[in-house]
Length: 605
Image (cartoon, rainbow, N blue to C red; front, top):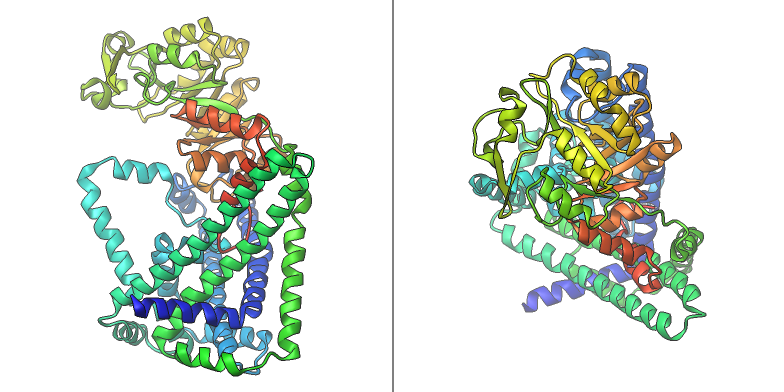
């Protein structure tokens, strides 16, 4: 414990010695990556997709699109290589710059950048590829440090993770995969400095040196990283709690000055967040450099710092850094005012997923619909399948085993056979409903629906036309809406029944789609303010699904989505009410602070 305390104190002293230079380095790097490089790659991907006549690109159609458009595939692979190179440049530039700062060399940042580029050119392609794989490997364990705008889309959607953890049979493999990734990320911690020092070395040699450098030290490295990052997290949480408590006091006792003080608190929060971000990055990268053994021992650096006087240049750097941070933080002051005053608050549509709220019934059944309708959601989202006799039944799964205990597909049974079945879930039971029955119940309770049209390979060619012929007028009369994962369904409905509101469901945000849909239902994990902004610019709505966590609800509100689909309707209503129904500035401060992003320095706004 004494060693860890000494290690922690020495690292904080080291950061304090060069804090202004570190902060300037991180802020400028983040601004360049987040404001120039990442948007450039996004623009390139969007242009390439559009030029090849591809309307949308997500993981569900990625392989078929690439097979039909080989030139697009080649172009995207080239962009992927460029992104790999940019990620490598970003991280190696930071490491080189830290080494320059600590050794007090005469190199300028431009010289360091050119040296970094030369190192990249000399690097073996296999080594750079392994470098990218290493970044991806450590993403689950280093979201604060490695949340780069260049790798922002490298994430697994929440619904996939939930599906994985819902099956106990694969818990052991999942745990083993995560544990293996953690061990490998630690054992290869010196990979970047090793490639910087020996860019032309064979990959096998590089990996061997990394493995030897961490032999018998994995646990010690993990403990150091855990202690450092935890200490910074504690400082950050403590600081935010102080700001929140002070703002709550201002709200209650200084109501006339509360708005000004809230803007000031947000201003301070922006500055401190940047400082803590820089501190985290520097401390973790310091572990990497120390493990590689290229910088002076920690105690030596600290002793030198005690006797070294500040030069005029150092003082000017500190003043310049403070000025830059003040300008960056001050640039959001107007937004802070608008946000705190509630001018950006648009009430999103509250949508009950599969017609239930916190397990109050069996999904997609009329009893659950009737209970949930009493809570007055804006929409009840539900699913329909085509049956064997080309009718429509309310059911999510294409197989009945999970809910009805019958191992048969929906398309193998007639509507009469299906509606005779009983489904069970959450301690409740109910009869399977036809869409006619469900729609009639919704109309009786004046409840609007968001109808998801499910598809299978057994659907009849006339399925969409049958649906339109039978339900278009009723859907329009009651202001119901439609969405589907199938773009063919969306396009056909917009062509044959253009007055119907149809949203295209996207499980992953790779690039913004160009479709005739009225809107998009986007899985919340990769949904961001850029996507919402582009959709709104084209007059399209954005629904987020399936949002059950309060923090994600807050993030979606902050992203200005038009609707939120949830299994926890009551919780969502409470969150929205707290956020919009004359909340205190302290509450808004807390919400805003939870949205501050990581490595790229962006805030979802």
